[in-house]
Amino acid sequence: MQKINLISDTVTKPTAGMLEAMWQAAVGDDVFGEDPTVNALEAKAAAMFGKEAALFCPSGTMTNQIALKVHTQPLDEVICDEYSHIFQYEVGGYAFNSGIGVNLIKGTNGKVTASQVAAAVKPLADWLPVSRLVVLENTANKGGGSYYTLDDIRPIQAVCAQHGMALHLDGARVFNALVETGESPLAVGAAFDSISVCLSKGLGAPVGSVLIGEKDFIRKARRVRKAMGGGMRQAGYLAAAGIYALDYHVDRLKEDNLHARHLGALLERMPFVGEVRPVQTNIVIFDVLPPFTAASFLARLSEYGIQASAFGPQTVRMVTHLDVSADMIDEVMRVIPLLG
Image 1 (tube, rainbow, N blue to C red):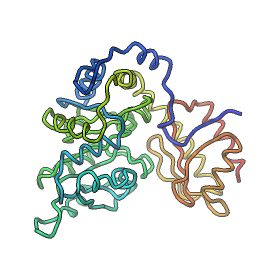
Image 2: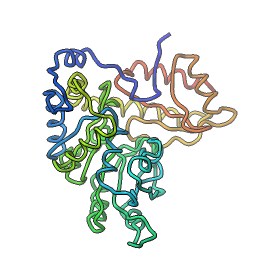
Image 3: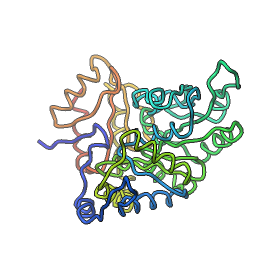
Image 4: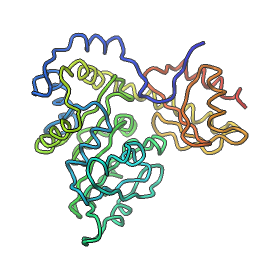
């Protein structure tokens, strides 16, 4: 039986071309700044977003946590949507690593507006944390892969400038958004003080994220990375996969987004499915109706070799990616109507 893994876009394996690039990589000791392939990846990522420098890290959680640490000091707070990855899925690292609070906004499918951000900024008082940083997630994982456009972002950027706050992009799947909007990484980079880009989700690299910003920010970030245990040695083998992903795996994200929309359209017609979140990129989140639970629905799917994940007692998430072909999507669409 063919196995179809829709649990996450983090499950991809390197392609043959990516493995060859990794095998051929020139390497050195990155802690000393002497790995030429890591240096090349960092320079490439920084240039794509119009920034001065970048830092290669093991994970997107680390790049986000480093950004929080560098942008803030203890007793500050970060403003973000209640669905944000930094709040939901990073183990409370904002408190553990940076000694800061979190000011949550109830947005729409993981997205907040400029007016909501402005209303969340706290006045200066001894008994209140200082609103120091705003974090946007693009695309919003728990929001069903929803995305911000530049028209959404620029008013938030203006609010941050007005109140002296930094603006960080958790761009774990930012290229899934950009292939839909047609906007350029350079324009996105101009709107943010720092950007985290994950290479090991839709882009298909096995490991790693890059944190992008200006030179002074990245200089501080590099020391924080070391303190967090993120300094790697001959990391060029991994960085080579990241370079290959940026060169060859961006445009094909349109296929993943299209596959997800096909799944979403089918699910909306199923009598055992309740709400389907708007499908904008490569994530499909939907509720199953009783007598199904998420667990029982996933168990039925697994009988056909299809894997997905529970996102709540009645909620299921499917994620399309590099290792899910059009034929596999056809098979999933054949199976789903059989489950009712």
